Image 1: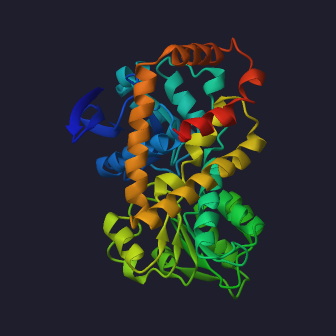
Image 2 (image 1 turned 90 degrees about the vertical axis):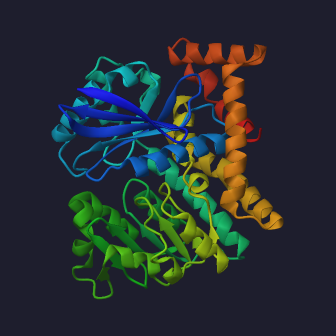
Length: 408
């Protein structure tokens, strides 16, 4: 078992191997205090390219929110649909090979595609790293991500003078983000007309029954589109790539890297593209859509809710409040960004990246060279992390404090 460290521009790439066979990679984009965090995914086609872009997206999310975290991402090669025991085996093997990086906390893993908080905790336990009780996630990151995505989508639609009620929406990737996003859209009166999984896409212009989609998904997994379509004459089964080109007002890519690219961007009809996934659009595709007047919300803006929600969860805020708090913080930030980008004649992404990186540098500087107030906050945070400060004292202060970081 071994690790090999290389550089990819400014990023550090850790190749994790066992007996010469590559198990996966850890890509560290930025560090704060020598540490970085981000999800660890278990997928059969993990690549350094995708992890590199996802690690940068993590830096941008933290920067956008003003959080003092470095950005990273890891990928383990394996079957995302494997049973729990097989996933545990793969993750434990990866952890043993990458033990120096994980034990030092240079990289702090969270759940991602193909993993959950329980699997991540088990992976760390395999090398003797204990996750403190207050650092154990409740497994609701996808729900929080969906909350920021719906907040950004409502703002983007509003810029066109369109209410979310009655809007036709297509969701690429009916998974941990796409499924709760469908619920949020349905509650607001949108018409979810298409969803997709790895097995294909499902389309019904009259609107899909979201409650039934969720039930089918729980029962049949990624194969549910065909099951849902049985006995429903209006429901059509399509190639999953066809979902992107349907006649809808709102498109939410919640799947994988670069599904919207130069080959299909010219055929996408949605006026609003609001991603729940990291980097689902290539730069050229984004430019193509914006050139015809579509509003493309930067992915790290639309999907930052997972990071923000996880931080609120750590602070002891009750899970039932977090989605609402995420929406309340992200909506005005997204609206301000889109307004200022339009006023400046800039792409929203161009402005968002510039501001997120500047804010990230300020947050890193404040964390690594704190003044008196910063040292007091850091000491209090460590006491809280150890369980010596009750959550009842921290939770009421957390939403306002986190909003103040994002405003810096």
